[in-house]
Amino acid sequence: DISLCATGKDIEALTCPGQNGAVTFPGSATFIPAPWLRESILNSEIIDSFQLINIALKDAKEFDEAHKDEPNTGGTAVEHAEDFSLWAYGVGKGLVKESRIRVKPDDAELKLYAKARQKDRILPPTGSDGNVLSNTAGDNASVLSQLTAAMSRQSEYAERANDLRKEELDRKKNKEEIKKSVGRIT
Image (cartoon, rainbow, N blue to C red; front, side):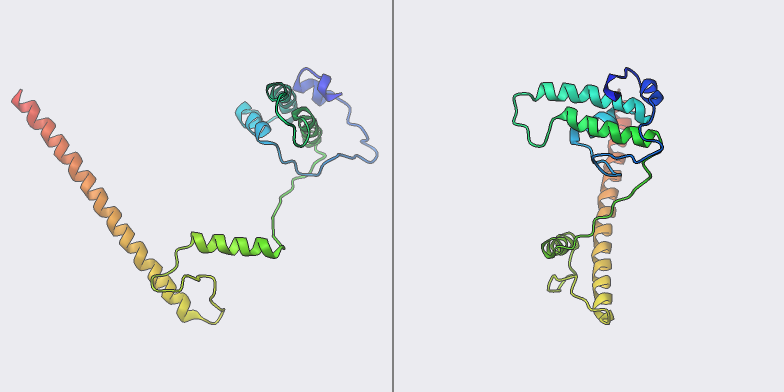
């Protein structure tokens, strides 16, 4: 039993169940940790999966104890840490292959939300109707005008930033000159 092991070495020494047969896990090849577990893992600065199991189990007990009077929505921290332990054990034994997740929304509402977020985050060109996502593939003139407007705006911002930097340098020079002149007087 993983939870009875005192060290990462003890966990690593456990015999892998079902090495010659089917191995099941009540999760998936990926594991998404709860915020408390994520913080626990990152703060430990340990990369050995077997050592992380002990840390997760210890911190889970502390988390459950600290939140015992709060309503529980989705299982205890210990249960979550046990799931993590199974996953981390599989990673440590080489039974979990590297996986990557790519979220591609297929829900129309999610697509509309994504478009709205893009529209809110990308500045529309000056004088446009604000719809930067409406260009058709053959509308090169519109794309070029948007690019030109964006570059003009970027140049204006860069010019203002340069002016601010120059003002700051002038202030620093004046401050140094005042210090030097005060030093000469005394």
